[in-house]
Image (cartoon, rainbow, N blue to C red):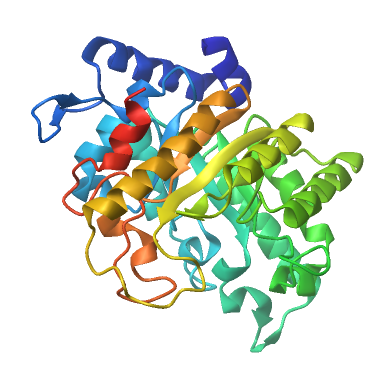
Length: 366
């Protein structure tokens, strides 16, 4: 397995992964013991999946301490939920702040974990100042140089420490057309995607570079992503994988659709990573608050859903190179405030008290 990790993640990350798995082999976990209510010791999630793929979680700097036991026990890969994005690192024209990103990378290294970089370009993380000069829209060449500087500086800062980057996040149209109509497309034209991948590769030639998107399993959008990959490759642009955001629900998407997408991307010779996994109790357009508390019936439905999805992931572990949950536990999930502010949601494997839910045991008892 070490040779495969060296190929996928680079020598330093492979060594950290090997150390982590050695710890799991000796202790059965990454941290202290956790117990089911019955008294049986719950396994380490990372340990259970050690022979399949790394298990990751998205974190904020504060959750590194508030959720420390869960993170160190159950995960071997970290993603900074917001602190590697442009608007956090460069909130103003005169301020550069890598402190949050540094804390995530330092924590990962201290605990033998890998790091996914997320995300170098995202239209919703583009600060207004980036596109203006003296109050007016900046010349496109100025914006281009700013973006090149940001990508080069950020990727180079973590060279050899971040094994993969979501270079462009959500750049494909949901329906009509090809590329999403964003401020990046408006100001820099379609070339911005190829440029971003080239700049990232130049800053760290060993990093794995991903295109990342939601609904990447939906057939129409899937084929637009395939088109993008093929066009980039035809132009000699380095791209190594597709990140499938797993923001799914109890009923959508069907497992067959996920399977078809994994196979389609794998057929291109790409790595496939599930980058933002959670199972919501609401569809995206549902604005009600009908689930104020988590019931046993709800947990059972969610557990069955997670089980069928992970059964599929295990089947394709030869091409899936990481599965990352978007959050550590239900109390810090973004779905508690988006799309409905303050509406409780329960999308992850651990509840608000950081206890294993039925879904956890559904994917570890096999």
